[in-house]
Length: 115
Image (cartoon, rainbow, N blue to C red):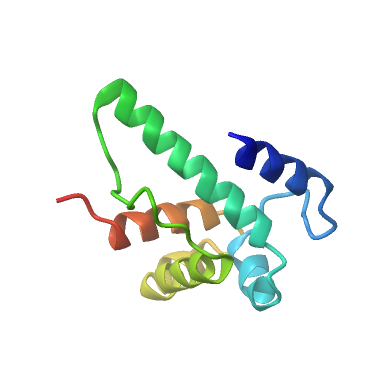
């Protein structure tokens, strides 16, 4: 729990934190610099909390990431980048939309399927 509190505080006071959700174009233009690393960690945290809540309420799992697996920012970026590359026509069409969270969710579903 303390980890999530610290992450929230770090995001709020980080100089690299952006006030708006990045669109696909902004993310792609800045992803190599790591400018959105904290944003990606926030998305990952929210995705995992949503997964836990959905499972507790409805017994549904969208992805099955091992509980002890902790992904680095570089790994999360690579998952998002691969998702964008694999569906480039969609993400190019909507490159002005803030779809990085969708890309991460789809990457989790693809990389951590439930059997």
